[in-house]
Length: 149
Image 1 (cartoon, rainbow, N blue to C red):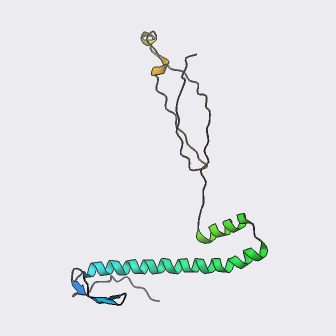
Image 2: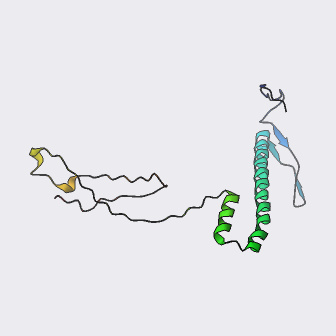
Image 3: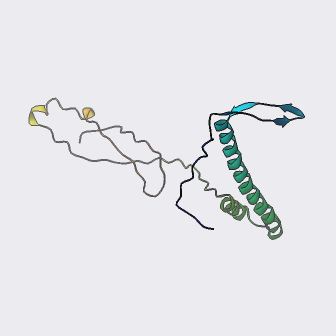
């Protein structure tokens, strides 16, 4: 197939806002709706995308139908079946696991001598950040019981 660097140009008579009347037959009823060319183009693009998705899903179902007899004959374990299904359909299943952690934070606050008499450790705002480099994590930190030692 030969490719060129030429730009595709719309024909001179192309009018995307032109109204077009066309025939629709649905449930033995015929109608003649009128639509803009742009609306018809969007409907056709949606149809092409739907047709492509349908073809992809049909292929996946055919592959699944081919795999089923082998699973039954070999008495494949549920874990193997789930793994093969995830591979076939491109799934990456996850499970949320809740956790709770205790952390001890020790620190030093540098206070001007003039403020020592009025200093209250409860007035110190501590900010704790939680990150995980291994997994996607959603966690909150709450600082409680700040005591002066």
